[in-house]
Length: 160
Image (cartoon, rainbow, N blue to C red; front, side, top):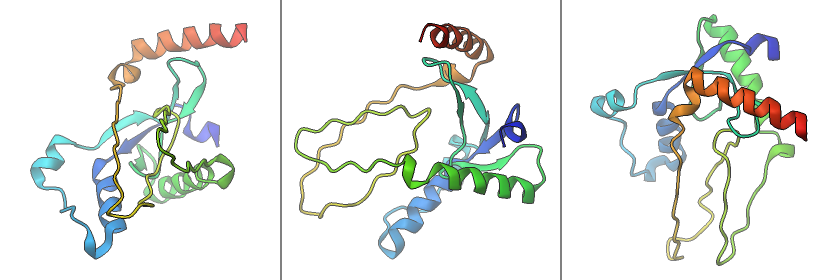
């Protein structure tokens, strides 16, 4: 599996995520389909499928069932089958954590190597306060940054 995705890129498309959220809401959804202008503002983009985590230096899979639509340069059927296999692996119960919220909880995760899924497990009359802080990872996808991260990560792995 690793050899099949090493060096490959995959296309990620925000519209895939948006449509999944619309379908999840069913007939009650307040989400309209993306307009052509919204699609232009968030066009599909290609990213390496395997990248080096900028802190740990470990190789990570950068593909997920929410956004990844195809493996670039691969026959559509082969791409779909390989992605389906990767996604099945990613969502296994052994890799999942379900948080049971309590007042005062704070949850932090690393978006580069974590899939997350919000659940509507609260009533409409229950108050909720959610604050999201997100570091934009533009630098992570630049080749010179990846080289630096890989060098740093290899040094970290050697000392641990």
